[in-house]
Image (cartoon, rainbow, N blue to C red; front, side, top):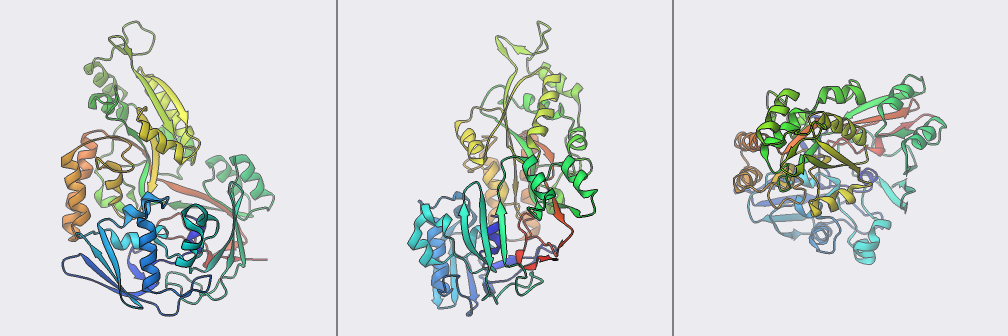
Length: 474
């Protein structure tokens, strides 16, 4: 998604600071009083990179593609919720009809996952090959994708319809190459040698070392959404017992983990959403570190170290935990420190580092884990629905609750801001009461770039740089 932010335009955009929705491919829009109909008035001067015209029919083709079962992304389809159909009232007026109100729709339409692609290119290449031949309307053209090596973009000289959140009307950098490296050390060396100009997800030790040098600048960019957290599997013993889940949460010294790995660059998570921009939805008190409470809860749950070997048992079963961590953002190191804390209260912990997100998703589907780590970005609290609804595609905790489902569904359809907030407060309290997750850190993308690079701005989602704004001194 990071390179593609500049390949595609969206119907609307979200201001990175105020959160306000602003025009982009749609100049204006109206929402019906019942919240079921959205009408968008589209720009009439936009062309795709293949010179085909953007209009209401092109937008309709994009929604049809997203809803096609062969389309590889479940996420994009989930983002448009109770979508019924899109209709062209005329060439440049688009009407979206919903089965029921869906409060997050504007937020969804502002994200690159629902960026507008050329219908001709979609038809020509199909779901399997389109990833190598992407065609949008954005300030950069998609030139080349070599898996596990690089993505190459070139500026679009015809671009004249950028949204107001861009500070530049034309790109000053002609070519941008996104390179993929297998290990962190190689990335850092490439930056120091001048082979790359900017690097994201920099380990803290490299960030502090490089930022002490005059030619480099450190940026810590807050990522809205869910923090790094470890979801606790409610369907597999022993974490099917809420007392065990509560004990595992109390056993972890989160401030120590954060200070050890990130210094003061990444804050301790307060709950299931990041403080930016969801502070109003978070509990006043976050889970406290208390090994005493953890030990007491495990005792109550019948887990006792009867033979003195440091591992608790309940009958013939050891307190054995299978933990899976993602490979990015110092998460393996955080998982190692969590493992130490859980072993200190009598658990035997097997830690596996998944090679990629696909492996994490496969593990979720198999369900043979007790804790699985993940962070996820988002600018609307509706993202909780995909993680905590019983049938959510990312229900890593495997929790099944009709009551929680109702709260999350009501919040997604509630258009009154104050009422919606109250529903989310109830849902988040329910998640905390059930001890479904161990929140670790509010996610921050620690970046290093060369001093010669300036005007680095990011989308509301935090990850995506506006390449059109970038300046590079000679």
